[in-house]
Length: 65
Image 1 (cartoon, rainbow, N blue to C red):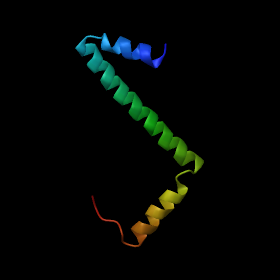
Image 2 (spheres, one colour):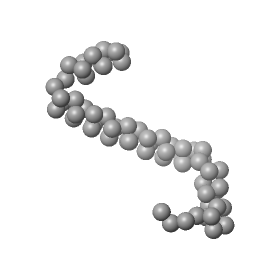
Image 3 (cartoon, helix red, strand yellow):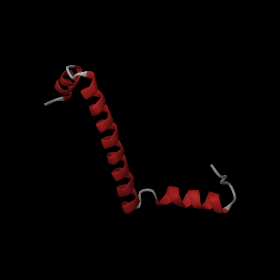
Image 4 (cartoon, rainbow, N blue to C red):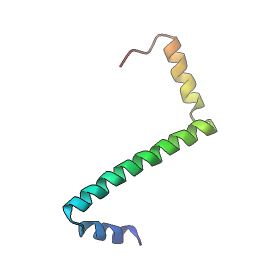
């Protein structure tokens, strides 16, 4: 099944089912994002960014949210 076929199938869904799908897709997208961040942390891809943030925090350049 390709994207166009999926889009057509989604357009044929009753509204309650489409809303369930939209919720599921948002949750799944968040899960994928979380996994990407975890992978980036494990492989060290974020080390330089984290070091920069830590340096700014130690220099007093951070403020409470």
